[in-house]
Figure 1: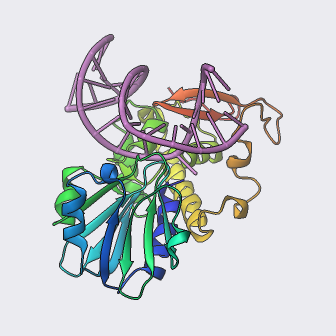
Figure 2: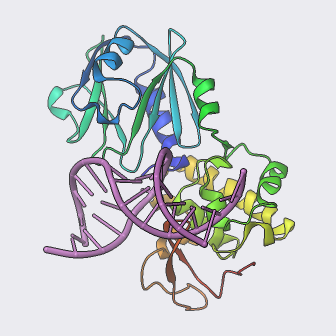
Length: 263
DNA sequence: TGTGATGTTGAATG
DNA sequence: GCATTCAACATCAC
């Protein structure tokens, strides 16, 4: 699930459920997704701590602790949060959960174990170490244009590059290319400045709307691409058949005549 | 049964 | 250094 709007939804969920409660116990079922320490060290570092606020940048969600450390949650492909009260409500693929001193629990569910969980002493150092770009909702137009213009990569590759801007994944990258009528294989440096500005503007409008809709696809406007983003689809106006191709390593959908190729 | 999936990383290649 | 492709990670659903 998790691109920027989904992670934003997780953040609201975390904020609304788990903040300001002392973690009484940490129960780790599978420490594979904990990337920078053992399950024991993780447990030790979090027991008796309280999450006091959160910060999201792209797909990375940081829960700040009362000792200045941060718990980083990256949801991979299938990460999810579940706040529950009865032990039998534990999600099926929960990898760990916190038991709070009021008896409630926050579980991290992740069937595919692609999530990355780290307990960090210094959040800023970590962000710097992975060269995480500015949040896609925050990046200024001029910075986006400046990042795109010298690059020979595809526009799709640029949008997916978390070092350039953080938060765009495969679906929303296809969405913005469609809405701006840009072929995803277009070379970033070949796209006119005016079109780059449009991409920036549309991207933020799309992400903003998705965030406001709690990443609930059913609430998205009818003319968005997601409903057509599947094999055999025909363009809603032109009837042109959809195309599927691997671009920048990811399966991409687009209408090759409707979306202009800049090269 | 085989295939591919909303992500990231590291290695190999050009 | 840059860009791309591929494999790996692990499980589920069609």
